[in-house]
Image 1 (cartoon, one colour):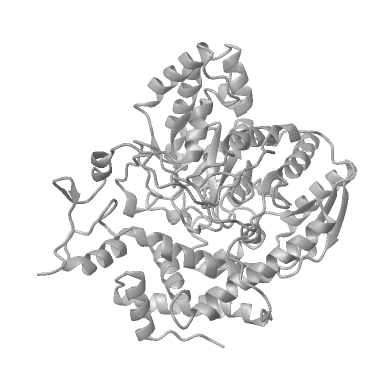
Image 2 (cartoon, each protein chain N blue to C red):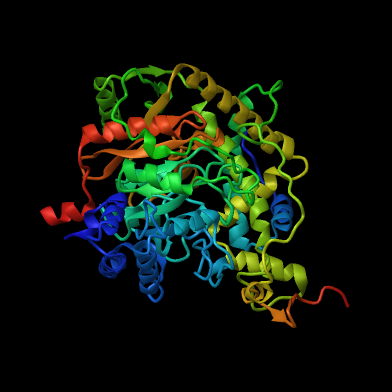
Length: 97
Length: 490
């Protein structure tokens, strides 16, 4: 069955993805996503009712460690990559009035 | 003395024997880059200023006996999605156009500990999303065998740099074939190790459950030596595995007597170019003549690997790339109103089309109401694919097949139809889903002189079997040649 992606879906996914698409990009995204989902629907041919989802290819265990700081103070180096910096902190747009 | 013709391990041995200096090797590479880069564009960044000083430092430490490693003094190129302290790391994206990491990835540190000399950072598909290196924000890389063709991707710059003798070896990363496929298109050796063998710390993540760093080299001997250096247990990567069998060079043995090799019938069917098929089967015949037991079998589920992969990879990508928000590092839009508008505009302007396509798809398959139908379904199919490989490896030591259905396509042919491009990953992608190791070895050229790659796949932790079979094949095959040698002939 062909997947038809509505304008609302693209708007919603845009919010989740934090992307602002132009009108043209939205039309393209609707087409691309519809085609990809048609293709992915092929997975529906397989009966997976009794299959456990596999997130990792072989068994792994959680890795714990003590919460000890091992790196030095590199605040200034880190901040030198920031688009906005003031008094040793990241600057962000005003978030409330 | 043509330094550039030597392999990485040959160069290291000659440096050790004082036949050549690290500075001479570095200069040879810089001259080669100077001559060829305007044709091929393998690199995003070359450390022209720093390289000689670092070469002298390494030479001093070799002379003093401090550095004795097998790659000491050898110039290496690093794919631009691995962090290098103090050296621009862009992921071939506008988003990271000015990003200078404050630490190096563990794989790079392991090379530096061994004394390898980092030359620069290679071009790639943006955030490793692509199969041609054409989605790079820094221009496409051209295939050194034929400049009208792509080098493959996403580690296209690394593979092309090795083929063009602009380095002695390179690091790539492989999420769905991104080391093996460009290695195949460029006529060099590339290996994706078992998931967890090489630390992913400092590798800018695309699909974390699939990503793995590996070597791209001139031959199998180099490949084994490099992997030996790269493999380590790293507490900073929680999926890193402790292995005490990483002496990969011990597997450089010319012997496949009694080795059981299976060729999936599904890998030889529709879509496979006739010349590629012929070359791969000829390579299989060589191994058979050397004593391997070779037969065809049904692997099954091959056609489901691509839809499962693109669902899982897009989902993980959408999550991993959330960190690019225009605050801590990377690109921030000029004009915005408030925080959310800044996020959206920065990301929309910073990411290219293919990256946005995958983030959108990933956000969709993870969204409430679709999660079970798409993402969870893909994880279940992944379990079935893993089971199919388990069954195959109960009968075979290795699986043999092509790397890609064709040789390198022409520039500009692939991006117009994403699904068609994704189909090119059919023989490489299930290896990542199952966490397996696999290698691409050059096995011939088509009628247009373009390289063809042979893929050898092993069970988890069986890199040595792959290396042994690849080494045996390579010895029987003889010298493969380079694009430079081909051009000198004309």
